[in-house]
Image 1 (cartoon, rainbow, N blue to C red):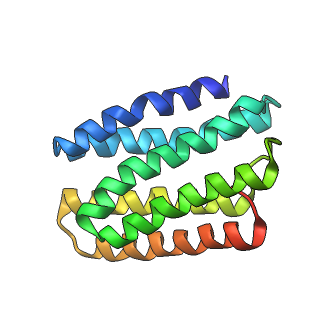
Image 2: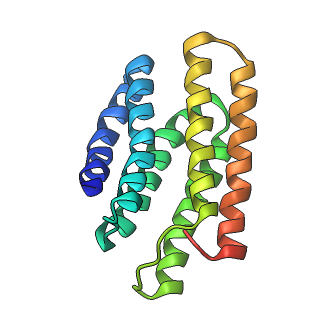
Length: 164
């Protein structure tokens, strides 16, 4: 069931945060990667097996935002830029609030621009982890580019497509 995978993602988040704060970056990286990939897996299962549910439409993007907001917020703040971390978290909050008011409780599935934003955020965070684990500065440059691109997609999502 794809909803079980979403629940799994919720469960992993406090563990990833703990390992990040304790500076066990290898374990945090592995758990983050598994959690991020589980997002693609639950979506694929839901679409291919026709198991899209209202619960999944609501809680899957919420799990994504919680994952990126907490994990991304910590390591983007620490290793890239507090300002960029603030922008990403603020945009995610604005997207949630504006979506709530715009759709007035109607359940609207995620659109492509939101999925691209999530992929860019997750891959960007993975590159920060790669920098932490290898010390190669080029990984931070790539992470920075990907995360600013994610900000552009979040802004497009908010202004143009009106979607989460």
